[in-house]
Length: 242
Image (cartoon, rainbow, N blue to C red; front, side):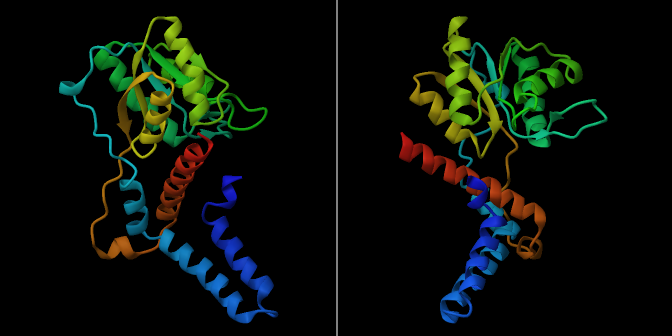
């Protein structure tokens, strides 16, 4: 459902409403068409994408000095998937998930903590994210995975289904690995269920600088704006639904 709220489809839908109204209410139609075009342009700017993402990522990066010896595990949340990966013989983790796995592997080697991977199938009939993540960690990073949570379909489920696995082994505090801009929503869910989560963010996006390139529309910026809006909408929905 959120695909209708995110760019570029939301911008096209806004302009499309204007197109339908063009004959009957031309003034109103111009507002819709112009608004859709303006929104698409603004969200395609690196400046806009950078500001939207930077506002979402308050947790600081971990350092060796800030490692928490009370943590008993590393929880890695799924991101995306590559469902057509013939070079690997099946589906595999997408770039965002791999970015998280790389940092989780680094953290595991630094702390010697066991890893939990969390994520259900990206679509019906597909391999679960968690299974793809386990394969990547064990085959490509040469690291074992202790817990696999292959049922969740969103951040709230990631947390809800992962905590019992950890508590069964007596773990009440763990590092959580996800993108910096997704971290606040993930931490809020752990806190809501009374579990102590320590932020281990990765994939930071720097605040934009004022130069010509930040005012040049790009597909990359539009994609990053979509990430940010997805996160804002997710926060709003979780706040409304409790």
